[in-house]
Length: 480
Ligand code: G6P
Image: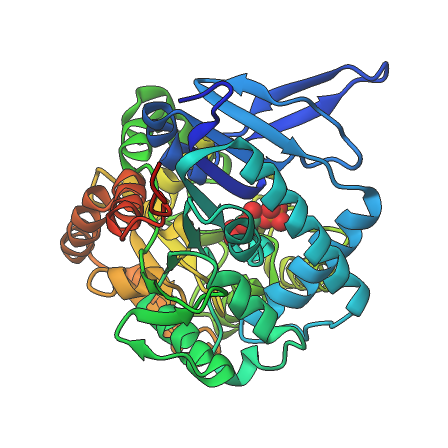
């Protein structure tokens, strides 16, 4: 129970599920930021008496733990230098590109590693302080891979789960990392290590075998403990999903349907509205998509009087060089294509460098005839699932990259593409634009059955179900 004895479930993630604002006179206030993870975990947190440990999102912000919707939020403070080295540096300029197939070259700096280690220890200490005896701790994502071991060292009584939201790379790439064994050891501090795809879990198990020579059998890894005993760690896939009902219900609302019609009419009522929705990240294949689209206009297979592309690119990690380069490149390409092909009242590409609330997103999904998800590498890609959840009218076509986790589950209804194959992608975009409504309905129904059944509540239940069913690590009592 909560209070002096601590919490039964402690979630540890780089970000808290709230946004803090500091006024000019230093007053701190906060708003819920309804991301996917918090929606997934809210019911289990409330039922289990949970605490969430995470960064406030601002530099040097010291905030006392606070209660929000039956959840204890525990802010971890990061200095400006730690944001630069741990968050922008090691997390997003070393691990992120390395784990996404080195699409951008990873940078290795020892000072960044030191900061990553120090900040991981701070998260671990905060989690340890909150956890009741025998509690479950669930750590999230690549920013916190050392935390499982750091927690176990202090608290062998806890059940520790880790979930990696992004891909886990093949050994041939992972072994570039100068601190590769430290990362493996950090993760093996958990009882259960979860990944998006079976292929990610297999990559991890292979890295464990090759870099640590531990015995593995299927998903089970045998790890020698410090005291000479052995522990079993399970590594397996738990593909994440979205709150499908919420998007389904949103998109059924008359105001949102009205907004969808308004969007189309503001675009000049094109016959075909295509849509891309991404964080402005080089993993998302935005450049490849825009190149294919520009060539289709050039070839005359699409024209601006009948078709348009809306590209939402929400700002992300703007202090990291690779993201600045990408923005310049994308904006240059959009400018060139519009300059070349747009006509008065008919833009070729509507480029929106903003984020939008879920209501507006649902309206855009409803308005779009073709959804383009063309990532070069993506752990899952939740936009693909949101689009499908919003289409209770059984209309619309999903063009989906083979290199997303989502492709493992959505191959039956989506049009799969290899975004590196520009000609192949162009053909698929044209096929999507011309697909008849019968075929659309058949495919969308298949996709919806899957997305509505496997929602995010199921994902968290299944992960926590496997974790809590694992043999308890509470040390045996040594008697009176
Ligand atoms: C991905 C990562 C998350 C991260 C999110 C936004 O989905 O898996 O851990 O929170 O991107 O990135 P940011 O750097 O803004 O937290």
